[in-house]
Image (cartoon, rainbow, N blue to C red; front, side, top):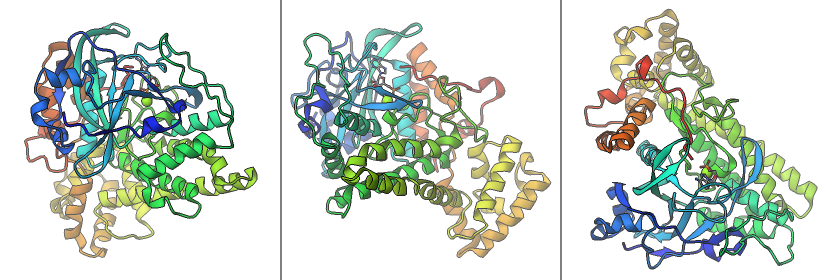
Length: 511
Ligand code: AMP
Ligand code: MG
């Protein structure tokens, strides 16, 4: 396929991964193939012909240059520490793009590994299609994310609450290094016994025979991550602290972008937070229709830990786990290291607020700053919350010269005294900025998508695919979300909020 694989991760100490091959499946069949992404990756279109592509991207046929591994990691899941690792994924290698950048090529659902615990190593078609659709929609929205190259049906069934068709997803990522990978390294460095019981015939990857100096594995991982994602910091003074700051910056920016489009990740465990700053692991994630900061979709998030408006707080909590893992690298003296960590981590809320306000200013068409902007933003959000207004459509409807000049022409939901008063303030604020209203319109149309992958549309597309083998709705979604700010297509059906009977209240991990 023209993969240019390198295997830098497999040169890390053996505790970081296990060598294990994907397990072939009964009857691989291509369901979705991302030709645009294949092209970006420089893959040979001739080799993407069937049935070879399905064989390769299910793991049935080993690419000559691949050296599959499962990565070891830990993580806090809903606040509790656990040893995890790729329980159903295989990293084939790091592919070098024509432009020189490297990306991980990972199969997900490709069979058990030493980290499978009680899982079967497999994935169901619905959740893999869901990850494909939403990750590609996020990419279309301009938000850093892992990408999806293909979904291949396995011709096998997986057993969850019921028998479901199985599938393998090929995921492309800047890397799969997670906060949980650092927690894992730190736990080993601290002498924690994280032995995974390997299936027969597979070497136990976690037996460390060498005596350890403080933070040895963590430092190795940090140096590797720095080289891969933050090469500009390699020579920085206090580089591990600079590294942590840079990771915080990317997470602050990422969560602000999620909130700009109404995205609820749903399972922000530390193993689902990348060091690259890409969104990863599309399980029970969903986009909010009506604005409500308490929105939770995930069936397993009963306390609302990962609710829409809690996401920055959780990112902060997760980053605290990261800086804890980095402590031995910050200073040889524990007290001094703690002081540095404390000083760094407490900057996160300020970093996030700056990013969030910048995103929300853009949504209101504002290109400069005034002290009352936060109140202007929050007053609109509160009005939306009280009215149950649709998050996406409200901002999009405001994104025109007509809406700025003529609030009376906006729909019925906007016709109340509170909104009129807000609209007057907003209009005056726009008049005061350089470029005035004219500068606001393109800014708003670039910040406020016309369409988001609404849950009821996503569920409908998954149902059609899984129940009836009909991929048309999924293809159509992908087409519309190729350019969500200006689809150029008749996308009116995708702009409609769900009718009451179409509403999706819960989403499931489907693992
Ligand atoms: P997730 O909730 O998708 O982030 O997954 C959490 C952990 O569970 C990861 O270590 C996965 O590899 C593992 N896992 C999820 N589903 C399975 C499965 N069917 N078989 C083995 N491991 C799994
Ligand atoms: Mg995960």
